[in-house]
Image 1 (cartoon, rainbow, N blue to C red):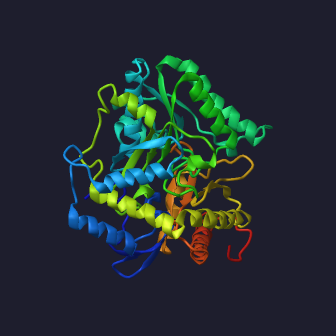
Image 2 (cartoon, rainbow, N blue to C red):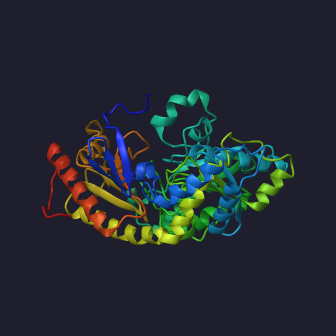
Image 3 (cartoon, one colour):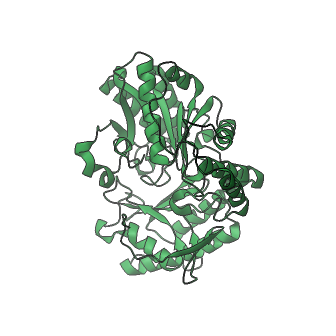
Length: 445
C-alpha cells in the first residue's frame, strides 16, 4: 500500500467515541474527526446494528436493476432536512464524486435549456473541491492542482473572502460586499453567456482553515448569480451533516443554493457515501432532455445508505447537531484564549465544530511563519506524539502559511474539550520552545 505520507504510524486497533487506540494500547483523541468525517464518533452500537440488519438483507443492488428501501428512505430523510426546494438526491461514494456530479448537472442543465456556450464554473482561490481532474480544475490549492495543469480544463477563480488579512478602513459588511463583487466582475470578464455556475464552500475547509465570510457576502453572491442566470453550488462536503451547528451551513445565512455537494459526515465514516442534492426544477429539466448522463457503480449502495440513514437518525435522536453548536462555542472560546498565551497565533475562526487557528509572525501584518519551519507538519506531529490528532494545511494557497483544524466529533463533551486543550497547549509549548517563540502565560489554557 502507498499513500501521500510516509510518516510512521501505528496500526489502529479500535475506535470508541472520540478516541482511537493503537495496537500497543496507546489512546489518541480524534481532534479532527479523521478528515472532518466522523461526526457522530466511532463504533456507535445503534448505527452498527442498523448496518448489520441491512447486511443480512443485501450489501449491493445495482441502481439500474433495483430500487432499495435504504436509498429511497435516506433520500427522503435528506430532502426533509435540507432547506426548502432542495429535494432531489443523487448518491455517490465521496466528496470528489459529489462535486463532480454537481458540475456535470450544471452543464447538462445549460444544454437542456438550449445554452450550449455555458460551461465555465467559477470557483475561489484558495479552495479545495476534490481530487478528480474535474474537481482539481475548481480547486485553488497549488501543490495539489499544479502538477496536473496540462491535463486540466482550468476554471476561472476569484479571491476567497479572507477579510482577516485585509488592512483597510472598511467594515466587515463592506468587505463582504467587496469580495462578492469580484464574482460579478469575473462573470463580465468571462462573458455571462459562458458561465454555468459558481461554486463555493460556505465555511472554508482545509485550504482556508474554517474561513467564515461576512454575512453580507452570501446574499450578494445569490443576487449576482440570479442576475446572470448562473447556478449557485455550495460545496458542503465538510460543512454538511451538522458540522457547523446546522444541518447544512447555508442555514446560517438564509441563502438557498441551487445544488449542494455533501459527503464526509453524511455517513460519518461508517461507509463511503456522498450525495448531490439539487432543486427539483433543475433535475426535471435535465430529465426531460434525455436524463442525467452520469453515474457510479456504487451510487445508492444499500449498505452505505443504511449507514447514512442510521447516522442521521442518531443525530436527531441524540441532539448531536445542537451539541455541535453548543460545544463549538465553548471550544472556540478556549482556542481564542490561547491567543493571550501565544502571540504567534494570528487568528482563530470557524463555526460550530469546524474551527481552526492560524500561526503567524505577528498579528499586525499577519506575515506567515518562515516557510522552512514547516510548522503545519511539526505541530501536528508534536500533538500526535502526545495523543491528539489535529489536521493542518498550508494557508496561503498551499505555498506557505500554517493553519490547524480542530474539529472533534460532534458528540464531544466539555470535559473532553478540556482534554483536547491540555494536549494542544503542551504541543504549542513544545513548538514555541523549538523555535524560541514567546509564551506570555504559563497557566493551563
